[in-house]
Length: 254
Image (cartoon, rainbow, N blue to C red):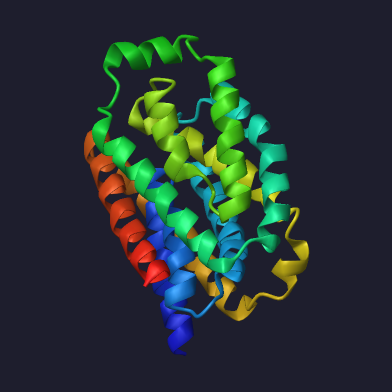
């Protein structure tokens, strides 16, 4: 019963993050599965991909209905990341658990620091991007890198896709959040394709309620994103990532 309650609470928080921020779900799901529910790092990354895929698709539908998904740039990111995500996912089984945890924490900290330093784009930048200023090669390069990290660390990539869309392609925060969900869903599915055996051994009595609570939380997160300004969401996102990264790094090296 305790595990069920923890799964429901953690799932709600993960869904809220994905719905409101377009990322951060997996960066919260992985430590929750490890430290609250007793999963190994390898099992947690696989379970996180399942949870985040289901939740991201739900949140993507809500953001698409609101017109916050830029399909051209999102498709470029997603297509470029499919093969790297699948290849890195297959390599994960051969890496030490501690190395995966440390790498996860470092990547989260770097993404958070970048978002804290980078201001939101100006309205002129956002209009330029909306009007056809998408740079296909930059989008493809960033997408390939995000796909590789998705496969390696079991993260959807939203906590890196959002700052990439904001700082590289000059998206305003709302469009970055919505478009990142397309990237997250695609990368996660590609990585899961290489983890079917691992997925079959997971504790579905815990993962099922986690997914259900996350999906409900994603709808609440979408409503929250409509009420809070983009720069404030960006700061909240970055601070949350830094806190999680610091905790995981300290735990991995002590």
